[in-house]
Length: 81
Image 1 (cartoon, rainbow, N blue to C red):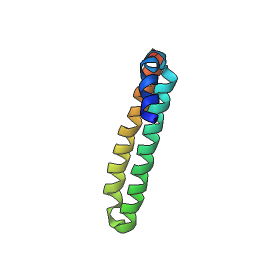
Image 2: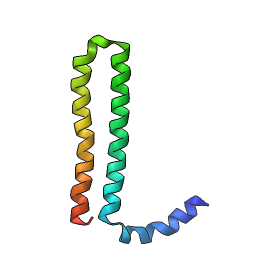
Image 3: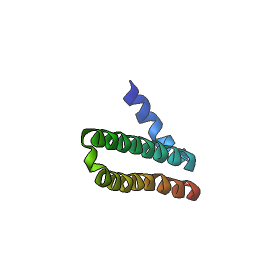
C-alpha cells in the first residue's frame, strides 16, 4: 500500500523538490550522524578513560566531516537544486 503511494508520488515529487527539502534532509542526516558519533565517543571514553586524547581527536574530525554534509546541503539549497 505505502509502496504504491510512493510510486505514484515520486514522478511528481522529482519536479517539485525545492532547496528547503534538500537542506532539511541534509541537516537531519548530519544531526543523526553527529549524535551517533558523540554517543560512541562518550561510550569509548567511559570504557577506557586513558584514550581521551585519541578519541577526542578522531571524534572532532569525524564530526567535522559529518557537518560538511549539511554545508553541502546548504549550498545546494541556495542553488535551488
